[in-house]
Length: 227
Image (cartoon, rainbow, N blue to C red; front, side, top):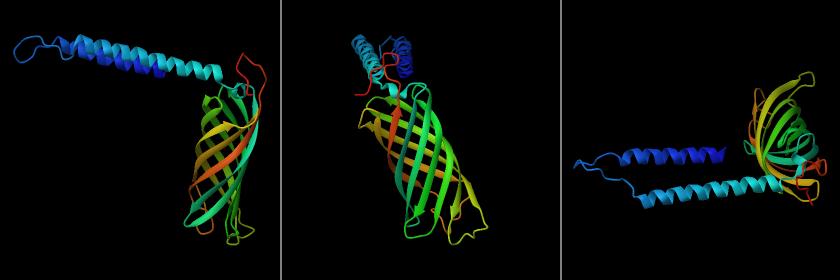
């Protein structure tokens, strides 16, 4: 897609220049805006760009790890930290996912948060989706989640169920450290429909580190395996 858009843009520019070439100047004489040499350089630059894009796509296809292929499972967990209103909260989470398409996974997650120096805590369970556009030994990903949670604190009576719904958006990168194990670093922002600002973390993002174990199917489709 990137290659197609780049080519279309360049051809459009060249077409516009060619049209302008036929326009006359103030003296009524036809005067080129750019020389033939400049146009040839532009064409060569376009061909070079297409070649580099092809190399990048071929590299991704040749070196992608088979753990990201359709039908594979993964499980993982991590810890995170965030700040809100001068307070620090710690977070821990577990997740399990399934790849429905190459690079696209969805699954379930569980999160637990606690304010440092405060008896406030929260827990939530939800569904998430992730997409890995680059699937080599250094892999990037973007994701989203929809969660249902509950808050607990001295300020919340035992009879009160302080429930909320949250949406999480994350972006991160993962590096392979063992044959099936990857370590990741990500940033997630959360948005809440209802949460008690007097006792809770409020709204904010968190920086997270974690690991994932991939139950890949060895030797599928000729894709290079993790070593």
